[in-house]
Amino acid sequence: MAFIHRRGLLLGAAALGLGALTQRAAAQTPVAAPPAGPHTHAPLPYGFDANEAAIDARTMELHWRFHHGAQVANLNRALAGQDAFAAMPLDELLMNLSRVPEAVRGAIRNNAGGHANHTMFWEIMGGQGGEPTGDLLAAINRDLGGMTEFRNRFNAASMGVFGSGWAFVTVTPSGALAIATRPNQDSPLMDGQRVLMGNDVWEHAYYLRYQNRRNEYVSGWWNILAWDKIAARYGAAMAGTLRV
Ligand code: MN
Image (cartoon, rainbow, N blue to C red; front, top):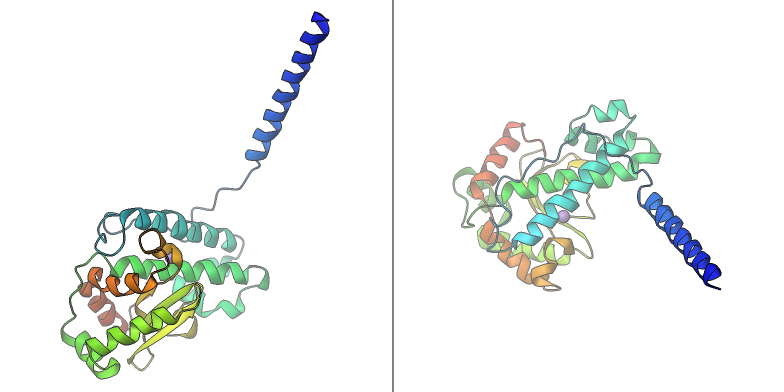
């Protein structure tokens, strides 16, 4: 009896061991590390807490590290073996999506769009809000009805995005400012426009602090804008040197 009992225990242990090994093998099923390039995930230009007035540090970290980070990794994966497209700058790639092989077009659309959108998004925040001056303010007055009207229209556009997407101010090829929205990670760069600024209204951008209250996020977001950075983007757009 004792012998059988011990043998049972041993078999049980062996079975457990095998189970653990199988589990470990499953956990280690190779997921190829993403290629190191051609696109890179740049560090945030400020600390995770720099936008605390509107966006909490934990949201900033999760958003930058995991959401944006995964898009860069998945973009590089999708570009593996696509030498002509891998060699293109991000904006050129987004303008040439229709030429991308169908098998990887969806992945490249989502991840290249997301990479461009988030790169712009980090760049224009980290400031103290306020209002722009100079040429940019003149363009806002000319094309968007002045700052109050602009804020109202932009907030309404942000609230009108159903599900996940973005609100943008674009610079059209003729140099005019316009408000636009796009679903998912689409970018106005796909239509040959330039992006002056934009707000991410995916829930991951605001849910920890605001839950379903997108309106509070959208109105508070103006308090962390860096108008000097946005003005520099405007100058670059007018000079034809703005990329994403
Ligand atoms: Mn996002």
